[in-house]
Image (cartoon, rainbow over all chains, first blue to last red; front, top):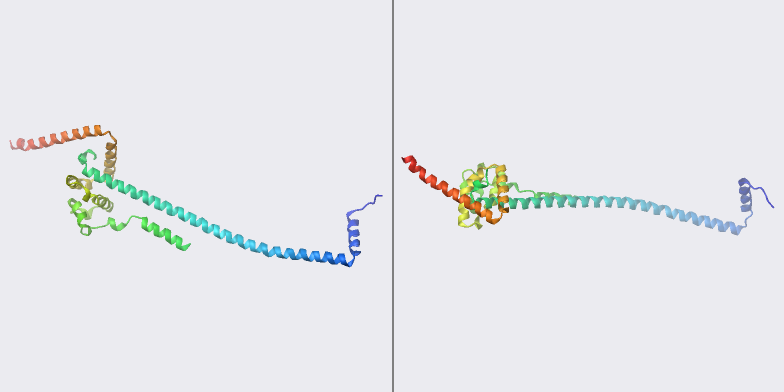
Length: 110
Length: 133
């Protein structure tokens, strides 16, 4: 047996059958709906908390970025300064060597 | 964060060259420094700051020199102070290059220079006699 049913008819039938449901089933469905709504309400603050956490994480990442950048800058400055110190030390050593060598200074000076 | 920036700034201050070391006047030098730089006593205060800094660094090594080296250091200091920074740089480069030459060849060069110096001294000694004639 085949019956021609369109979506409108199906909706009408479902609405009709819902009205025919007994009180116990209706109460169970209502409880389930209520629980689902409560669960949804719990999720919303959790999302809000996560959003706050994300902002906190971004701030921390920014601080970390600046700390790393600062450390790199400090290392660069310290390295340059150390290199300069070594260069100056070597230059002073060379100057003394030229000034005290057994060859006259004119040999090295144009 | 603020303390970190302060730390970096402090590091910058400590690592930079102290300006006071360069601008030391002759009277502010220590006894050892004055002894080492004695030939420059007259012109010390007129020398450029960076040159004074360099010379002070060489003067630090003066106490460790032998009497012969001290005498050479003193006799060459004035001429050295009159050279330009470029001439100093060139002299250092030449000295470095000369030290890379094998010891034997270096000794030959030194021998040649000694002979030339001896020749000059002999010629210098004979000149007064010639001019007297």
